[in-house]
Length: 455
Image 1 (tube, rainbow, N blue to C red):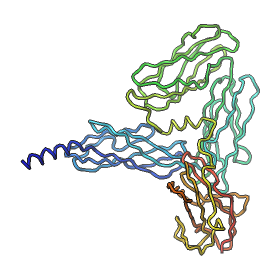
Image 2: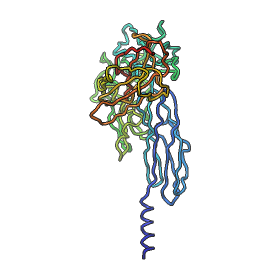
Image 3: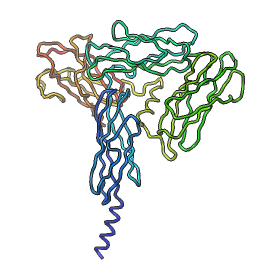
Image 4: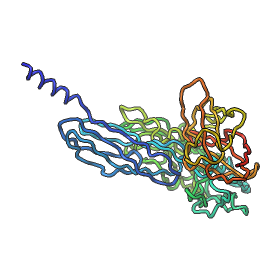
């Protein structure tokens, strides 16, 4: 009787177990780089399991993609994460097919940028195709080294002229091609001389208004559910109210088809483009481009497409590749202002003498200025960086290779931080300040520069 009960209980226990899948955190890397991070899978059942692992992002990879995991064993697969131009916290999703069920696992990390400004942008605004083109200037800075320079331009949009300024820190750009109409949403890629990042991107935006334009640009097509045939109509209007011809139609960035369709209601100087969204693409935020040839004007019209695709029975995968956050970042307001973090000096001095009893968090050397600061609120904060200069006016250069991570503790008292500059030279005067790094990639200055003489 006891044996029968034991066997039944064992069988019930075994069938209730499920494989456990754990993601990983790859730490910090710079944009335009890749990193490896293992996913661990535990099989607590008495049966082998055949696994299939696939990344949601086509730029990521996993090795091996499939494996057989023996009973009562633990295995690992190695993911390779490609970080393009997405600063801040990174979340990469992988789907693990366990045969009878599926699980989603997240690989996390943080992407740093050598540039001081988050996603630098040249915004032309609305530009008439007939007007004389104006030139926009953007100046770039980096606290990665004193002698920051732009070394070259490796890519630019076809309809944008760009050159490096004489100071080798700025770019001058202007729209050059009158035959390109509509939404300009592209980027300039430059080569830079920072030690950990060799290239950077500058977003270029604008709306070049020609004789033919859509009702809205970019065009929001809404939420599309997989498995349901969804289409939408984009009306094109002539500013002169005259009929016009439609040439070649191309779609980039989205799996879809398009064809000329009548406007509704029909009226002179209006042609419609109907777009059908296909099912063979990942769910999440979709962003693409519709390119329409206008042979009468010898021009090409560009229309941005923006929408969401979700699986039939699932909600949108929140934060998948951070695309949803990227769409939110287009809004004019900034979600977390720098004022969310409040710094206050410790005791009377922001920087204490070298013989302080406190030791550095990052350096075993007990010599050098000890920086101390307190933070009252860390909403949205990822960590802190230390900057130093030999002059109050700068230039300031970042000292700590690794970010001092925010504690993010729920406490009614201020959080204490300290860091020692073991590279400071005796007899030299330095100016220091603490910088704050936010989870979305933004950078700010937490404190005003303070002076100390190293003794």
